[in-house]
Length: 455
Image 1 (cartoon, rainbow, N blue to C red):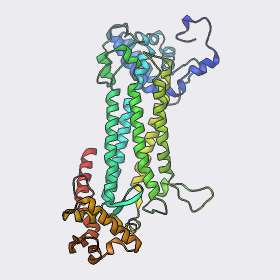
Image 2: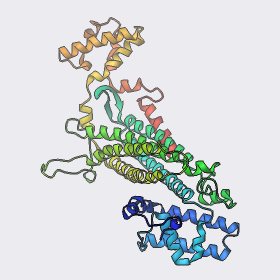
Image 3: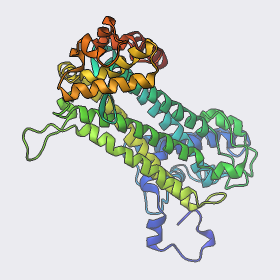
């Protein structure tokens, strides 16, 4: 027997039962559902629906259900459409009609909306904490690798020399912006719908602000229709997770390339690598490849729910049952991605010798052009002069940093003996001690600031 079947003349078809059932996934919300039910029971007690002893009975019954669920001792039945009705059924079985009065003035519509907001808020905070751990790993890497000069790349071509710590800090600061998106999603989620009823507001004058305080919400929904219908917070959460996944995927791609024999810049620890079933020599960066692959999953979950939500009017429709699986999936996989990437970074071996050997002297071409610009030559003309020098080096198989002053003067009389300083990696770095640049002092400032940000 269903809790809603009084209006119906025959039972649902068995296929409809299976189609309608969401218990297989929304049981994830059991802790949030019970927290919301305990708060609601307290509100009913304050308006006289429950006596004090009845409230104590309801609380004990609900906490017992959660405890038994965590122990794996709860038996669900076919009539349990979702976790909300399952908890109510079990409560009534355990404490009788007192449990049946718990739903007074409450709808599953505001109940599930509250559960989803509670879950999402807690899940986002967990992700934010895990991002902070990844950021700490990046600070550790930056401190360990501050002496390594590496080629910086654009278009996957060597561009200019940078301190490797500068690269790690680029990851840190983009994660800081990802965190700000996650934190804003928390703010959007932090509104309690409970008391909205089915859509017109509860018929019982409960103290909604008191309930919100008990559940840890900073505010209550000011409009009951919006309270049960709104899922923009969930869309924002999925969007923020997808953005974070895309960012992490980009850095995973770099490390995948750098771990190849052709680059040889880094080597993953054996604990975070896998082998081949047929090629004994293989060491594959599967941890990073899976991290890269998960980004598609996060984007897909966002698109899946966005596509569902765009066709739903006000207020509650059963379509909204489709909000939970993409959310649960994204949260679970993002937690794993962040934890795995953190360990990959902590255990990563950086091959300084290979990186140093790979530094192409042509990385210093911009410094030769900057030299002329400092002497007064318009930069566009200086760019052309150095372009001809680069062509000369390529045609004559001469490393740029081995050119003599006489050779350089053939291209411009503005070159003087001090130009030879441009062939120093350290000089190239020191010229970029601008705020945010790759100069050593600048990078130290970036690391110091990063430490303050993560605490």
